[in-house]
Amino acid sequence: MTYKKLADGRLQPSSVLRENKQLIEQADRCAYCGATGVKLQWEHILPLSRGGSDTVDNLVLACAPCNLAKGALQPLEWYAQRGLDHKEIPRLVMGKLLKQVLEAHRQQGTLEASEYPVGEGLHLWNVCQVIGSRQR
Image (cartoon, rainbow, N blue to C red; front, side, top):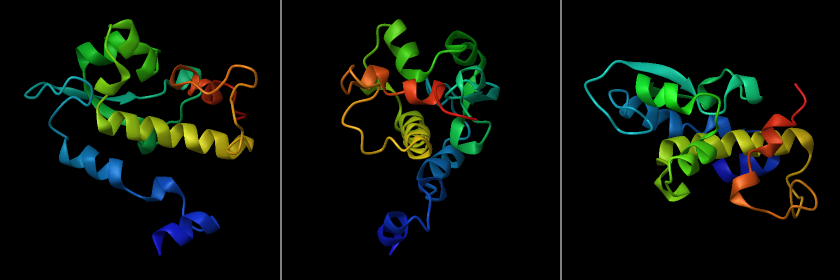
């Protein structure tokens, strides 16, 4: 039933609360480094300054060191800058990131594109470019 609603456009992926359930279950630890017993703050996965939204689908709880270090980078950039593989991005963060990318492609009508941006192929490292180019 859920798949049919998604396919028909009657249900949006953001309505499927898997990541938000994880957010609540992991409310005592940093979404990026897993630190516990520290004060956490809301952090935008895709920074507002780069087209990210100010919704729960774009928010995680992060410790101050991770929030400060990540700054205006999106997770793929930040992890690469730290010499870490994209496979080390926690499931909660990657799930929310991909929801944002999917929604941006839906809004731009580029879900069926074989590559984006055109001429650059389909690569994990440019997957977030659709966010910065989205019409607000």
